[in-house]
Image (tube, rainbow, N blue to C red):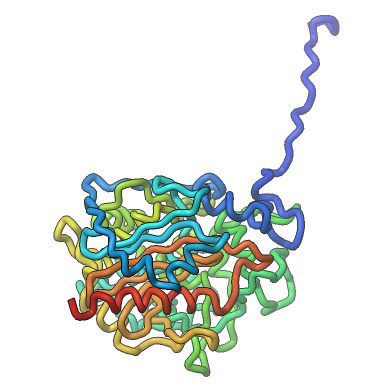
Length: 398
């Protein structure tokens, strides 16, 4: 070919994904205060990898508003802030209260963050019931390749956030690799495994199981009664369930979503290896999270009559066992849920909460987006849960 016939093809220029790149304050762009609300309202579009699940049969919800809920001063307060997104109170198959922010609709999905974790209560309750697993066995019995951060811990300790290792649930810690042996590893580094931020330049993408296996500990025993909250615990639990049964986490999840009878799509983030990110990667609508909470309120019994959890396990979760919670909380942590001995549920980074009360068959879903630097305050979620306790008390004698 003559030089005159040769085509010049310029090199293509690429830029890092604008949502996932870390620009300032060691946070990905989506999680900066000015961008966080948009991201939480569209999180299924933020995660690098995700999958959606829909149920074939839906639990229809009838709306019969109980004005007593909306008239509560605390309800007015938490739904009247600039960071409020949505709140739904449901009992059996009835919506008793429903409210949305002007910029958020009933059809929109919202990031659930760590509410995603409580799926492990259903999965492990069922595994215990059918004899597939012994919670007193050690993690290394199921995952021989796990690192010292979890190897000697029992499954029960991991379920209760009762393990000590070098992971630090610190939202301000650096996401860069520290080669010093045993150096603390912050939550921001786990976000790389979640697919929520790009790795530092020169590093390769890694998955959640590789990350969990890299954690180390000289002694996994928690010497206090307080919760040692670590998000990778959830990744380890999903791995154990898969090893114990030969079933993938997605198989468990499909059964659970179908049992809840959600109407829209349940989105769950995946890591680069296709592993569901139950540590914080779920998104759904406020009504669907209420339907999901009702599954716990029914002690794990699905709308199709199939048990995807365990009534006995949920009762044991509520009976005062587990760890005490953090020093700023008045409720404890047991079997992958928060509980005060009556209700069980979970909170999420940025201002989410799901509460289920089996005594009254009530579930409450709540979405908000804190827009301060940290998206976290010690007193906010306890304040929200106290409000919810007043609500479920309305139905205690009914």
